[in-house]
Length: 107
Image 1 (cartoon, rainbow, N blue to C red):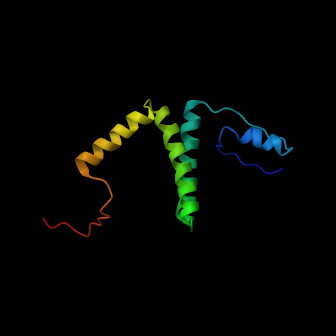
Image 2: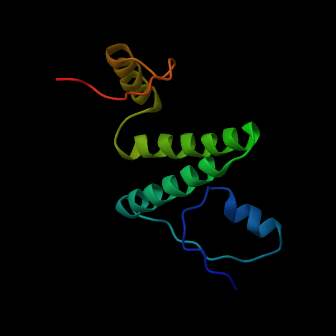
């Protein structure tokens, strides 16, 4: 029987059960969730980096966004509050629309 020891989405128990398989799960406390969600972010980021099509890239970005939303909640903010922080930073420092790549700054 394969061992996974990783954070999974909420519907995974039902999906496994529907496939006629049995699995063991436990609910993580907040600190454990934070540790595992950070690991999952790295996993999903690596999958995004390895994506070779726009469709695959968008799927992985959606996974990253799902994790970011869950982590925002752990840190005590709503998705709307997180968006407000993002928008404020964009207003103050800009976004990434112009694809600028800094080479050097002279003193």
